Image (cartoon, rainbow, N blue to C red; front, side, top):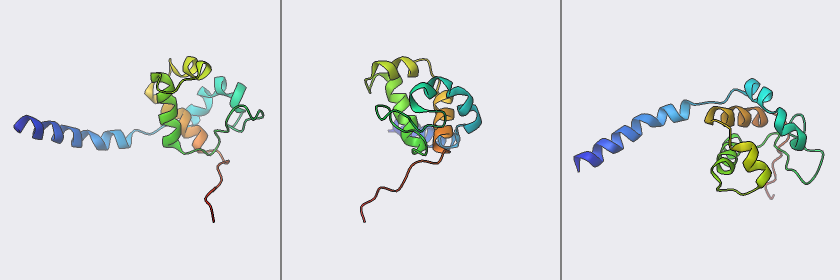
Length: 109
């Protein structure tokens, strides 16, 4: 029981560190050069085959890239691009694309 309480306490202490980890949009812009071939200069794709990334939710982009890197999402092109990315690269790219104008409210009215 004591080990379980200690493990929970350690986990709770690390949560603020994980939440404080932020991507740097300017670094993400520099790292996005490979992405631009399919997703456009600022994340607005010129080909409907590739999704727009501009204005997408940052946490969604982080999860998507992490899932491609881990093989939980399968797309040969994206897996090859995401596999060498570090956690910081992913946060930076997500911050860059999330900072762009593009996502619209698609809620049903």
